[in-house]
Image (cartoon, rainbow, N blue to C red):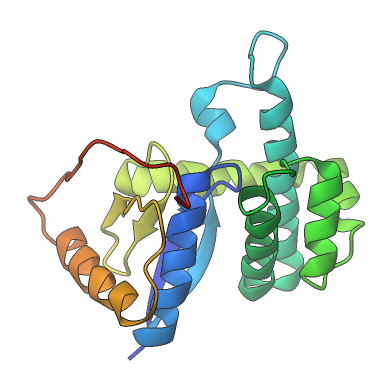
Length: 201
């Protein structure tokens, strides 16, 4: 029987990107399907205003999240997953690109979606309500404080796993087996060690 797994992400986060590459590999070797869910690092780290040194990046991230919300609503989960995959490839796999409007438009086109969805998302205030609702649900359900966050059908979830390089093939499945088991343990909270590599290294 196929298990639906919620995967909360923010397209700005390179660590969430690596974990998303892993969970896509898991879909190939285990009976799971991913429900792509949003999470806003801007909400966690402060609004994109003139007092925030990361204002430009957070504003572009907000535009990407709102576009993803509109794509979810209009085209469904698979389309949102394709857009996130395109965004991640452009932003996190290319040192020459960053998350900005031209890249969002390019990702929309690459995912087979209308580039005008960016403009529609920015013009529609309800897209930000959708982002906030998904963010707040992750916080309420599992105490989410960052990304990636995985939530199982049982309602139990966890931050992580944080991987520098996404495992592939059966290695991805074995990691999933352990992560899924740990998430279901009521008394388990955290495993952590020093990060000695950058995402993708």
